[in-house]
Length: 174
Image (cartoon, rainbow, N blue to C red; front, side, top):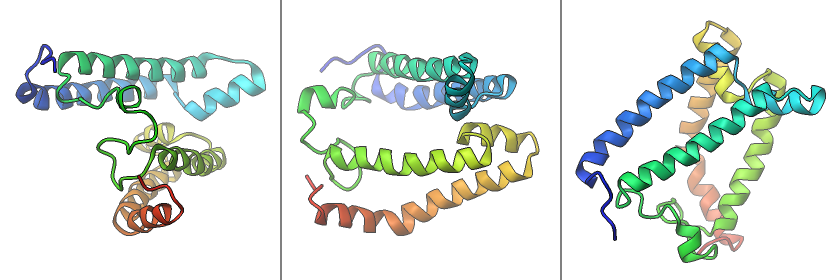
């Protein structure tokens, strides 16, 4: 396997440091622009405005390009980047917890994604926008952010094991 430009020992520190700096930059830009991914889709479908939607598409595209760049710099640290092309979609997702097949993870993206979308419509902004609004002093957004963090911990500690067991019983195990 190719070693890339950065050795794995350096990439272990360089990639998270660069990611943290990039996160601060994205947070600053999100705050300055009023970024909201859900608002981007809303504005496009209701008013045909593309300003927020183009920001969302730019964020997704930039994330993919950045991941490709990190993979180019140190492919050993991201050896499973192209797993779907090399292993097929019927094998377990490398590094993913639970040993489930990709269908389970697609289901995990669709069902909770629907509820997140529903909640963000009621709250008036996506999780990124709620985080920005919380940092600006919005109490409702701060409670959303606290609930999002607490819900993530509760799911990881208490619920995830049950969900993985249920998915294996339903035939989504690898």
